[in-house]
Every structure is written in C-alpha cells, then in structure tokens.
Image (cartoon, rainbow, N blue to C red; front, side, top):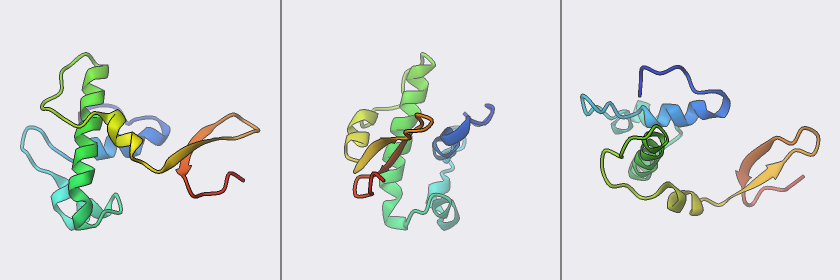
Length: 105
C-alpha cells in the first residue's frame, strides 16, 4: 500500500497509520518510540493502534476486492467503541468527528 498516491484530505492520517507496517519486511514503525510519536501514542497504546490499523487495512483491501491478510476485529466494532459524535457545519454542510464531551457550539 506504500506505492499509491497520497490519500485526499483527512484520509492522509489513515493512510499513514495503515502504512506503519511493511508487509514484505515485517517492519512495524509502531515498534519504535518515534513511530508511535507520529500518532501521539504511548508504548502501552501500540497494540490498540495495531488492532485499528489491521482493521483499516482489511477494509481497504475489501474495498479493492481483496481478502484480508488475516482475521481482524471488524472495523465497525472498533469504531463503535469510540466516544465520538458527528457535527455538521450549518454554513457549508461539512461533517466532522469530535469527542463526545465537546460542545456542539
């Protein structure tokens, strides 16, 4: 997945997370403090990030008509655990995710 054009807009972060694992070499940048720092992750959060990464990778592969490389937690299950809600800008209709505790203002 590393040889593709950059993802548009807000998808760049997702592309970056998916690409933290080099499937061919097995190198995982989440194994390093520097790699985790890119995403603001502490060492203890790496496994959760890996679970999300592999679910995102499986969703990307499915979208392209390919099977996942291995069994993963369904992405919908992971996203349902996130304490987020969607806000919609009244002026331009843009939607964005915000932490559930944030004001709607």
